Structure formats: structure tokens, C-alpha cells
Amino acid sequence: MRNVIISREELRPFAKGDSLADLTKALLNQQKTSWELLRKNYESLNKIEIKTFSFDGFEIKVQFNPGRITSSTAKVDAASIKARKCFLCLENLPEGQRGIPFNEDYLILANPYPIFREHFTIPSLIHQPQYLKPAINDLLKLSKELGKYYVVFYNGPKAGASAPDHLHFQAGEKNFLPLYIEINKLKGEKLLEYYVNHNFTLYHSKDYLRNLFLIESSDANKIKKAIESILDSLQEFTDLDEEPMINILSFFEGEKWKIIVIPREKHRPDYYFNEGEEQILFSPASVDLGGVCITPREEDFKKISADILVDALKQVTIPQEKFLRVLARLKDVCKIYC
Ligand SMILES: [Zn+2]
Image (cartoon, rainbow, N blue to C red; front, side, top):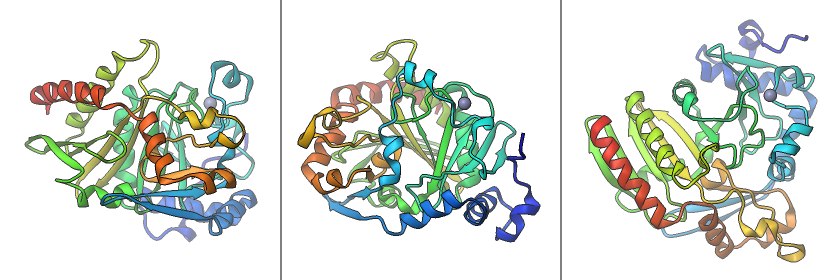
């Protein structure tokens, strides 16, 4: 098999420093010089259109990105998954793609179909299902190491992951997401403190178009307990053999994590399944809920309005009544562990 792993020596001409974040940045630059498909797709990203909708103190952007059609319309039912070659398995990676090992369990790869100007996919080296609970520590460690430049995010197997059969995270520049910029600005307005203890704060959103939790702490164990509690509460509304639908965005800065947890109600809004003129191919995952909604077809980009966005985000995220139940349970768990 060809050598997929790229060495530090090969990355050095592209790197400004030795940290994993710097090497990751260097990987993308290296790939732009050696992999034509990737170079072209990042070049196309400079030309794509974006429109911005302003709401009460925050923004949602819409990006017209034709390169994302495969991901947005990915068939993730068991039969379709079984019928295709797994594109995240090492032996199926495209010619030209190279990667940096992380933790001896994962490989950091430049994403050849980017949303971000710097976009990475981080698959497990082993083909195993997308499943968060045993991988929470990996998510935290990875986001700490990449936090200087990047947000690390997780799309649940039924919540936007286009490879639900192969455990993976993604990463992109954190400044790109309106949510990142809004986290501090909206505290006390749209993000309300719910539980505070030594080195741990839990916030919940209010009137922010999507019900979400923000956990801030420098204690990985406390964060892990909180995420597990959210998953356990959501499990009550879900089949036992399925992970509850969830998206997570993990930032690390100022020596602490800022974790956004977004419980989901639906994989795709009704607009996705409408026919003809009424159809809008919008299939939200972490990035969309972070404030950059992707439309791979131009007609959808033109059609999408503030009202449609409000309605679509409401459809795919957890309704208020369930949200409050999860929140109440979470407070009880936090009182013991956080
Ligand atoms: Zn695989």
C-alpha cells in the first residue's frame, strides 16, 4: 500500500511551528501543491456566494457550495452504506491524499470538498461506527491540540454524518462560524447561565433559533459527564440501538473548552423531501447549526429566506418541552459530578 502518512520532514517547508495545529495547517498547504483535485476545489471556494441574514443580535449565513452536493444528499440508510466502499478507510483514500496521525488512533486529512477555507476530516484508523460516548475524550484532546486555529466538530450518525459507519470528526477555522463570534457576545441575552460551580459553567440558549447547550470548563472529566448525561436523557426519546441525534462543536482557548451541544429532532427538514419548486436541498449538520447553512444548488440558495431558515432550524432541532426536560436532568447530574 502507498505511504499515506506524511512525515514531519515533508511538512516542515509548509509549517510555521511544531504544534499539531501548525502541522495540520501545513498539511493543507502541502496537499494544495501535490493534489490537483483538492487544489482546484479550494480555489473554487474563493468564488462561491454567501448571503447573510441578521436576526436579533446574531447572524446566519447561507453559502452556495456546489461541491457539497454529494455530502448533502448522501444516502445514509443501512443498504446504501453497505453497497458502497467506505471512503474513510485507509485503503480507499484517493491517490494523492496524505495524512497526519493523531493519538495513534486517527488520521488528520485535508477535506477535498471544503466548506471552510481550511477544512479537515479526522477518521479513526479502524472502520467502526460513528458513536460518540467512547470517543468523547478523543474529541476533547483533539480540540485542545487544534484549538489555536480550529473548531473540532462531530455529526451524529443520524444527524448529518455522511459516513455513519466510520467514526470521524471534522475541523475548520473557528473564526468562520458566526456562533463562535457570538458565544461571548450573547452571554446573558441568548445564552443564559443555568448551573455554575468551580471551574464549570453550563449555559442554555434562548430565542436563538436552535436550542443548544454551552459547557465551559477546563476539566475534561466534568465535560464528559455532562455530555454523557445529555446523551442519556435524549436516549429516552430514541430507539435503544441508535445514538440520539446530536451535533457537537468543540472550541478550546484560554485554557478551557467551550463545547456546544445541539440535540436534534430530525435529520432533514420537510423542505428537503418536497418535490419540484417546493424542494430545498438543505441538510443541516454542525456547520449549519454553527451559523453557516450550506445549499449545494443555486436555486435553493436563491430561494432560501429568513422565514424558511427559522422554520427549517426549528424543525431539525429539539423542541422546547424536550429541551427543558433534558436541561433539568442535566442539572441534577451536574450537582453530583460537576
Ligand atoms: Zn471505513
